[in-house]
Amino acid sequence: MATPRLFRLKSQLAPAPEGPVATELPYARIYVDTGVFHLDTHYDYEVPEKFSEIVKTGVRVQVPFGNREVEGLVIERVVAPSVISGLKSITKVLSHHLVATPKSLELIAQTAQRWATNPWDVIRSAIPPRVAAVDKAFSPTAFRSVRSSNQSDVCFRAFEPHISAHAQVASIALDSIRKGSVLIVAPDERDIIAICAHLQASSAPVVRIDSGLSRNDRYANFLQSMQEQHQIVIGSRSAVFAPLPPGSTIIVFKESSPDLYEVRSPAWNARDVAMIRKSIDSARVILCGFVPSLDVAALIDTKRISYFNSNAKVSVKAFTPVDSSLLPGRIFTDIRSNISQGPVLFLLPRKGYANGILCAHCKNVALCACGGRLHLTSKNADPACRICGTLTKEWKCSFCARDKKFVVSRGIERAQEEIARAFPNTAIVLSFGDVIKDHVESKPCIVLATPGAIPQVNGGYSAVVVLEGLTYFSHDDLRANERANELFFEVAGSVKKGGVVLLVIDDSHPIVSSLIRWNPSAILKRELAQRAEISFPPSVNSAVMILPTAQASPLVSGINKAISDARLASDTRVLGPTKIDSQSSKIVVLSSSDSRTALTAFLHELMRRRSIAKKSDSSLRIDPYSL
Image (tube, rainbow, N blue to C red):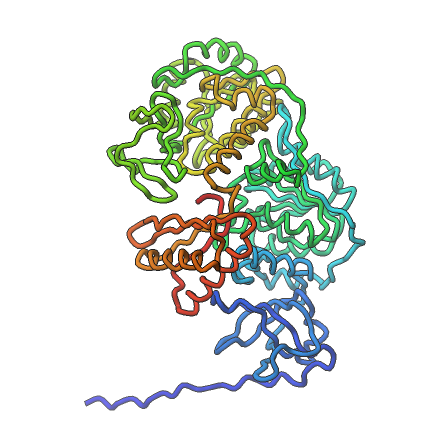
């Protein structure tokens, strides 16, 4: 018989004494990485005398929390704590470097409140992870302040055609550097690299802080950006939190891009964070793109944002598609006459890009009774609404009352075969998916690309052909027209002077006349009016909750009771629950702009209570990119 082993008692270690508490400002107010949603307030800790000189606002520290040691970020030093008993001491200073300023901490706090989240969720995006080797290579330097400008403004600048958008934003940055530091926020690494290439010729220092860099380089560049003035800082969406001197300029490149929305909770977006910085940092905010998003268009319409556009003209021809043909017969003459002058761009949607439904007779988008767009999950499925989940078994077009549906979809590889037969002995360059070309030579060829993978050409394309034009407007979410408008203007802008834009779309479509005038005002006003009519964003605020299906219906009942009890505005609408998969469902809440604060506070408290009840298997997004 084996001899039984003795019980091993769990040892309890008392924290090592940290010595006397600092005599001056002996307490620090700290954001703590609690890892728990509802533990989202700051906490007070004693500052040991030995750390007194280095524990400053914006310094990373290690503190005890519960039965473990966690990271914290110092908000401020104070004379007296908010609680008297049970105070613990800072156990370690992780880095002597300041990674936040009082202004950037205020931005983090306002962002957390605006998107109903724990401040540490914002800190994870705002401040790169620490790298010890980089810390040792830098000397601690306080953030230099400059005189604050008393004036700040915000505007939207529309790009001109025939000139690279990256060159135009670089020009705006170089003009703004004379007034102070500049921050450029771009959607992705391709844009960042292209903009940096145009900035290389300038004498202004350029600092990149984006995920395309190594962890060491990103952290080192972040620290460098805090130590200098009159520099250009460029990065992806998280760079919008980079500390800046007061009076700096923030440029948001392609502000309507979905890549500027944080994919993780709480789904903040760089444009709105930049708008918050306008008042905190006295910053000048320049939003730019080919077409403003509907959110910005609504602000332009109410004169809260200035709008600047050029009076350029673009040669545009529209060709009505015939049956299912990829290329209408009359388009060949224009393509052949331009292909000898240089590269011709053919733009085609990705396979499966548009699973939205159109009326086969009048080509209007099929809509649900709630105003959302219908889609098909399979060939023989009934049309379903992505927003409210309602199935429409006997669908009829709300415009012409016909019941024949039309779904558009064509893959790029099949298109290549058809174009190769139509233009034999012509080189074809593909750019899509994992095979993306950044540049192509300015010589006769056909470039077949998908959205987001269009190569740059010095001098521009001799012609641009947009295939299956209606498809881009047929996607089944509310942002379909917004993305399509931006894409059409961006592609048309890549044509060289004297070139032509060829659209395979009915000439009566409003995008045609908008491109000819190089002015999207008419289509934006029409879209805003339609959204207001059905009470959808941006005319109202929105929130999306995803949670286990079993909990969804009771939660909807609770929200509806809050409306009846006047805890939420009477015009608040609740759509759903809509099943996402076998386990999760979605709830959409819509409310007027006047009640945004009340709705956000209510949902934030709801999520905190769910966290206290250990129901952490849910997420909340305030004003997300898509419903």
